[in-house]
Length: 295
Image (tube, rainbow, N blue to C red; front, side, top):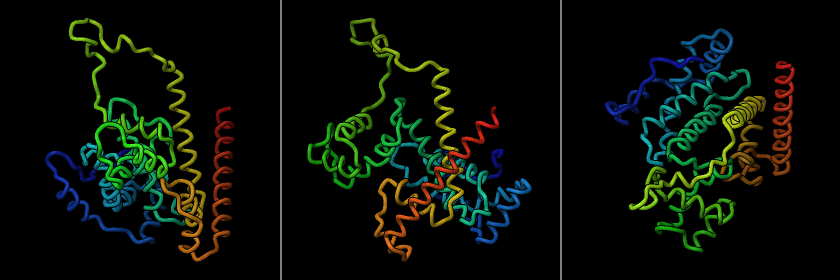
């Protein structure tokens, strides 16, 4: 979908309060209105319908973006990235699945903002795996809860608590804390004031060549799209239970979900297993279709 024009923007001239006031003029949609607009976009490519779907959710984007203000990046940039994720969600939204757009869009909005933060927060790449990304986006929160404001390395007590809370090793917590605490330095800085050599002269390039790196990025993006598209094949309850059990930073217990849905814990477990199996099957089938189409 081409970028939707006419969206409010937030920049140096437009402060946050003014932007929030401006996006309130876009009314929220009822489920019936959302379905009608979704069908118009999906079946007929109606850009006006897509525009309404996006603008009616700008408040959701702003709310999610506000939760990432602690990373030192301009709120306008976070909101803009979230709006990109919102447009991607509308592009792939299927109203016939029976769930609301907001539920589906939250994943795209968060993913877009988090990817932007990881690429912009530091010149050094901070997160390369799902576990590292989880640690990056939760370490500050847990440190704040523990009032762990000491300079340098964490105390042994706080280190143990954080590692236990986030279910990672103490070594990973220490490494990430040091990376978050350190500032970026130029590799062109001299080793010593009386020497000509620079820090970069001592670095060994152990990265893959450009072809391999590009192929890996393409494969990673393909897997993400397969997962996101496969999620649309689940009904609302299956998707929410699967997300709550397997895709949240702090998974919900079977007991909590059984009370929420008024069913037994065993029934929650069965729904989770069934949803996961459906997800795997959808991804396998999509992969097969890809191979056949490229053959």
